[in-house]
Figure (cartoon, rainbow, N blue to C red):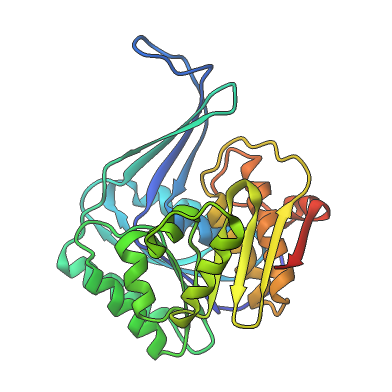
Length: 315
């Protein structure tokens, strides 16, 4: 596969996970349930974004942290996706995410554990991410922080990335997202709940939600607002766009769909496409991911099959 970009996309994998997807007839209280294992994957939001970007044909640099026991599994997955990587390895285990898919389409997510990093590992991870950044690069910090990687560590990474002239891209929640906005990232990607948290209130109307996203533009350059089954919105100082898939989406599960949205948007925008076209491609990536048991887009071809049904309009 021809690589469209050379070294301008960097993804930080701060908190990896092993994702297991299991199909079950239904969940009930007590007793044993027989299920079918659909996938075991290297996950965590940073890993998902990096692999989606690579599967879309981009040259991607990954900097992350891995637990010793599962490091070979993650390295093999990154190599298979042709992601260039250098990781800090620490003692301990990787957190586990289990998605249970019921016959009626309900998906239940079980999250277990959290990685703990030492102060030395946190320092090495900060340095690895900062060293990979350069002028005109996009540096993605996606997902939660492991235990021991403080808000101060996170903000120092953002500061170092901006000092290098790179564009920080943030997908986080809660206090981590608030801290990111204090450091003026290029892009943030909240969902409805995360934007509600930033606004300090619940907003039902999508129109008002987009208006709330506009309020963030004094602290960042771009807001990519994930709207779930309603697609996504892109809010910039130059304008606002909405995009959605008009065709029925056969949702298998939702893990990684927001990461696919971000990867698709960034892939096209970094290649010089217009904001509206990049948003449309991102929404197609999210829809394509939802129809598979995988936590990352598998190919550009599957996204192109979704594109005819995806519309974009100024909002």
